[in-house]
Amino acid sequence: MKSLTRRTALKQMGIAGSGLALAPSLFATDRLPEDRKLGVALVGLGNYATIMLGPALKETQHCYLAGLVTGTPAKADKWAKEYNVPQKNIYNYETFDQIADNDEIDIIYIVLPNFMHAEYTIRAAEAGKHVICEKPMALTSAECEEMIAACKKADRILSIGYRLQYERHHQEVMRLGQNKVHGPIHLIESGLAYRVRRPGIWRLDKEKGGGGAIMDLGVYCIQAARYTTGKEPISVTAQAYTYDSEWFKDIHETVMWQMEFPGGTIAHAVTSYSTYVDRHFVSAEKGWFECQPSFNGRGTSGRTHEGPMDLPQVSQQATQMDDVASSIKEKRSPLVTGEEGLTDLRLIEAILSAADNGRKVML
Image (cartoon, rainbow, N blue to C red; front, side):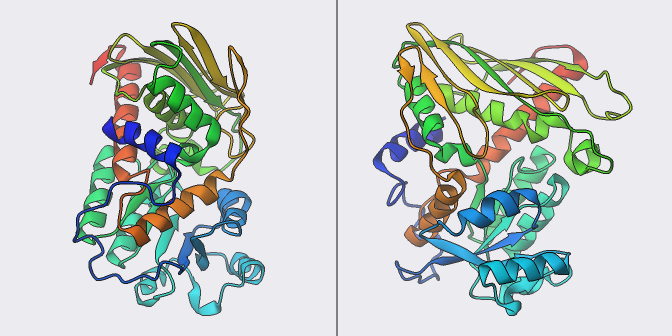
């Protein structure tokens, strides 16, 4: 977990100019002026892109919305007018690969359903573009490995959309936990759940979503436990439940799991598509701290046993995209890399195995 510990320290120093330099050969042929904003193309103009990423790109300092990829012409027209995107920078899924010839687009942000993440990340890398891919990174750890390999072969950055790495309250959780400010951590309780009941939604399709709430929501709890402790779990146990078999045919409705960390820390987490939960609570030897709501795209709140965390709200998405753009110009690793996504997919696979087999899985 050196990367997470390093990341926390870098954030305390500020994002601009942070990070270790990558190998001298990285982007060896790129010559980008320091004051140039990098162009971002959003692939998929669904709810998250519309509500969060688009508005965030109006706040970014190191990048801007330069291109669009959508299969819906009406969406393309609406976005083009609002964000002043030229027609030559608008693509559909049939013309996507032509983006390789567009020098105004530097970064491709994949905001598609989970089953399309691997394909479009690899195609984006082959087009010579840097990539941000939404979480979960892919359907399987094997796909994650292919995505990482493709970006390394193309000498392009791959970052995963773990926006909470850039949120002030979660950065404080990292500091308190990893530095043992209130002593060693004994127990972590995390939960993220919301009710999903809509015909045809891809999240309920195992082949498209990958496994239900554990993929879509549970990954936040996995991330939070890892960056709170600054360590990797050594074992997992899990339990899965499905009561509404009409909606949940081949995925679990609710999953609970426990991760054991070196030193005796236990993280208990729950995710579901049948109720609402949004909290991250940490109990240490000499006190406690928590975020509630915790995993929202905005509006996170935190407190400790000593009182509220008096921290400003920031645009997680704008800060995230600015870090990736800055890392490209500075030829360094972004704070969140593809390897982070791979680690979480391996843990999801272990959790599902533990739930299905009723046995502890050693990691």
